[in-house]
Length: 395
Image 1: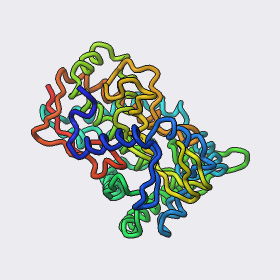
Image 2: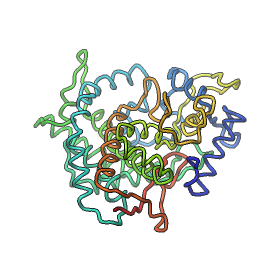
Image 3: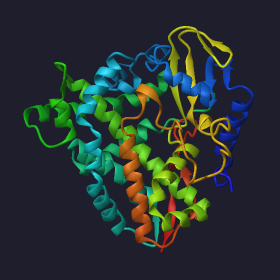
């Protein structure tokens, strides 16, 4: 059974389109919008490897929005060197691999608390895949976990827009609809930062306030911007990956049986989930000058859609790419990016997903997706892929 077999027809159609374009035109001009799409693994890797040519700063392509400019101050995902590297190094001094690894016992405890409340029928997003990363990130930042419904409301607004595969950046009307939410998030987190400057605690915001490198420190806006990115992108990544893992294991019971028999294979399974169905199906770049890619010339100041979901299924890089294969090694998927923009939160998403899957296996001998109740996906698989409603049967 292939990795697309359990998908709704509309989403299967997107993946079919990606596979067809990669095979026939790995670098493609969308004449309707004037933007470009990149599908091949080699070509996508080239884009990631050259941030000077393929910029992460999309400001020139988007309508002016004051709230967006506030949000962008600490969002080094949308910055270019040298400032991107300066901010990332500062954040990395506080958000270390050791910090993430030390969260493992608490992640296990939160997972168990959430699973204690489920019955033999449950909706897994509401019960586990959404609250787990939200509670972890809230505790990590040092903000009240009781505000998680507030956070969810913000995230729902920011992730509610639908985009077709041939659309590129959001327009002025959509940005206006986001503005109140962006301002509310920014005000909330700047207040948190100011509180830590007055009363430091044992949390990530306090550590970011104190972080210093070569005499540089982060200002309030930069810390608030990073906290917003961690909250929104960080929680939705784990929500999507964990839900997708449950769906794929339901579709491949032989793989689920292998994982139950050998838990050491769970990390490899998570990597294969990430390869097959990345939480973010594409990323965006802007050319700073004319770029030669895949035998095509992309003009300067042009939007480029970089399709991770296509690159991860490139048979030139991954033999039998439509198979869900635990033995795939190496597995150099691009779901967390590559190079200077490799996802800083990847270790946390991997850790949360591993612990949650292992605890599900420990506690339930049977875990099946209740497809009669209907699985619902995020509204735009052309940008964000994952289940927003996942009914399951547990025994």
